[in-house]
Length: 260
Image (cartoon, rainbow, N blue to C red; front, side, top):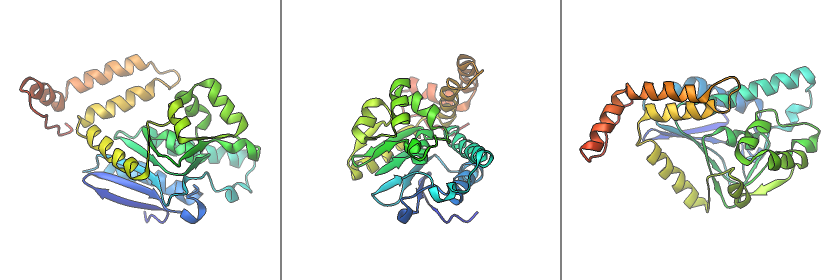
């Protein structure tokens, strides 16, 4: 697939995907959503050397300022549900991706942009970032998982307040509430994302994949997260990486994980 709205750059196994619609404040239109779907469902899984993915937006004004509202004008009940279904499916691919996905959040991160950031495993924000789910101002609600993931990060009471008022919060408040992991100046934020990626990807990749799977299981209906953890622990115990990690610990050396 030819990417027109995503700029991809892979360096030392870390793929940076920049949403490149700066004039539209990087709004997620249908074409961009299709590109994100292809990236996480087809492209990234087949990159043999891939260790992790960073998602960000072009420019300083917005990471993703929301969905492209012009495309909403033709929606009715059936089309709206179908659109939300596609969006949720795409963001599930991101949330369940077996390698670390970190959002580098700069500027406005609203609506679908906030939902995209929440689907990532970690979030590092610049000091000028702001967050919100302002869909009620249009007489609609978040449809790409925002009503569910926001509760997971900041709790029911505050999530209901932000969802029903449409208010924005700044980066420091987002950090206080637990929505983002770090708030830093732009260059420091970029460096922090790289440092986090380097640290995470130095661990056993099979173990990282199972941590992502086990944590996600906690939030799935009719899934026993403890059972998923048991199975994942057993799986990890049978890998070559575990044997290498344990031996390296005993020998007081750095492990050489190979993802096997």
